[in-house]
Length: 351
Ligand SMILES: Nc1nc2c(ncn2[C@@H]2O[C@H](COP(=O)(O)OP(=O)(O)OP(=O)(O)O)[C@@H](O)[C@H]2O)c(=O)[nH]1
Ligand SMILES: [Zn+2]
Image 1 (cartoon, rainbow, N blue to C red):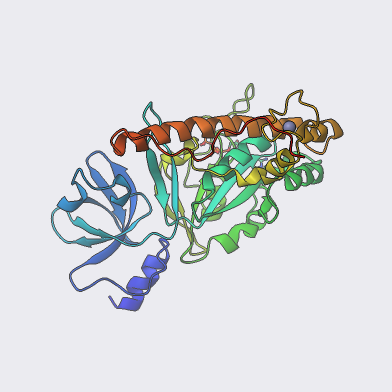
Image 2 (image 1 turned 90 degrees about the vertical axis):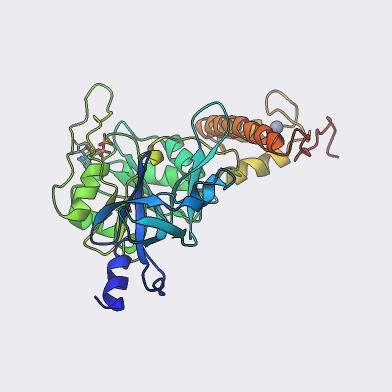
């Protein structure tokens, strides 16, 4: 096989490089990680591999070990061995579940995070904001998708609300996931060399959209249970799907569990920070303090109560993760206290 063929094959699994590794080494992408080893795809086959010894050293930062989405260089053997991880263009991470803070890589080299929400009972702008916060700092571009466009006719109003709420420039597309013509708006995100992940709650229509993109009925779709509008977990686990448009979809279970890492800036809510800057007191609690710009915005309707609540919730969650992160870093430094990022500010008038 010529180099051009190999490169073309690798484009279809999201590789954007142009230099193939040295003689005797092969390139492949990590599509799953199990206790027993890694599952790789080379654009043609799925196969198992083991990490080389240097990845197992305890002193190695876990972030340097191969992760889902990585392009890795392998040397042949039974099984083949991963000897090198290529530089990552994006890194999606999350706080790992559990008591101790861990920042865990969910997937690397993802260009687009397609955040899917149904325009039915599932529609929830707060959940969209949460997904968007998770993509902050990753380098991946979030794209908001509203499925089930065909199920309601007040979509323009919903879209306007959402556009007012999300950062300007965030792509938002309303689609009917069952209609190839409707789904075609996504093709610019799914070209050769592109990698996307599809996230959204159960029943949002991920399998339906995936099937339409594939042009086949390869994934099981389940009818949404009526009483709670949540779908059954019917997604057949398929780690990497090559799409007819040339891009690929990575499906990783880690994307389904949402937890902030503590490192988010919550840039989505920059307008609320700007409001808080205008409160009379620098340490305003935005409750019943006089001269509170946040309360004023809530009263005038400039700031919606729901968005304010979501901001508080995400902020608290981030603070909690950040303090666990701080404690962990302190343990690593051998118990020395960390310099506080924000010194405590006393009540004072801004004037
Ligand atoms: N009318 C309409 N129904 C849709 C659309 N997208 C999905 N559905 C229906 O919604 C239900 C759930 O869709 P799925 O594709 O199984 O949802 P999912 O997100 O894959 O769900 P899980 O597999 O549980 O994660 C199915 O009955 C679909 O037929 C759409 O755009 N329009
Ligand atoms: Zn205030």
